[in-house]
Image (cartoon, rainbow, N blue to C red; front, side):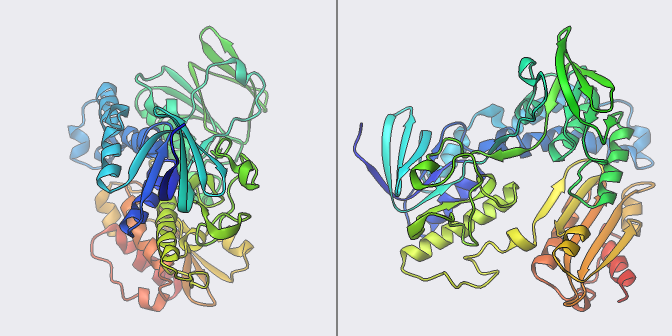
Length: 474
């Protein structure tokens, strides 16, 4: 075994979250080592955010053209599936992570391929291409090991070949038929992507509508969109058993019916990837989400040296929120290394990940898209807010120009005591870029009477802001 290598900061996991934690630390004058057992760039770059959105984008562009008179008449064919898959492959760099490694090195971050595990106080052992390496962190260890698929307890599941989200985003052919289990974000996005590429898709979900954690209107409109693309929705039911049949998969449902697909995509959620990172050596339970405070420090570990961000924690499982939390952690570590006391830092300071509690944005890239930030009306009420809820059909001049017979919805959740927004949802085609205006309003706690003076340009989809505020009474 080689001598112990020392760095100020050691980061386990080189996805976007780990990259941000390491780069932020280096930018603050510290040394950092980034350890990764698979591909630098992580799940998001190769099997999640980027390839899934690339699969969806071509279908969305074609659907958008067909929604506008003039361009509709010019569209004479369907998607070229091979071209779509080639374009998807390009966004994953053909699953080659050398550019990501170069990025880290150019940012001043040292990299090490291998599986890293905590072995005690600020100590990490790494087994990989360089053999067994022992590493010591002078300041902090940051766990950014992401998440892994959650496998549901379905009878016979271990006896059939299945797709997870990785196979669902990286497949090199279009299946003739696809059975999707799970009506959350991954299930709905991939069901629509493969349906538009020509697969006969059946989607099974135990909730009464897709995307059950969103506002009800969002799930209802997404269900309409999926059905319009030929997806066979089986909702308010569950898969009780699966079996192989002539090279395909047959599934028995809790309502007594059976469905069949050439491939079975299991999209029933994810859990923290903390099974084998040595948590037991510091008194924590492997496999559990890491509980973190507002600074990203792991609760239950003394001396303030262990941090975590992203899907491995109890915080929102979204790439952008994990990156945000990682930047906060980097700033916290740098400040503490300089002797600064950040314990009493206020909300919304650079040392607190306040947005993870109050202003989390998310886009579900289905068609229609679901764009939401902050609290749903149900959550706000449950948490004790005195709310006003404003609902509108998304009918403004800008959206009418964007698509003939534009169909969408908007909801605004207002904290009546402060007259600020605590939640906004937009549902409709091609609305993702509109969400950041809502995120700024929620994160900035902009008073509605001031927001009324943010005049939306005519004719754009942003006019929905004027209509919502008018409906509220301003």
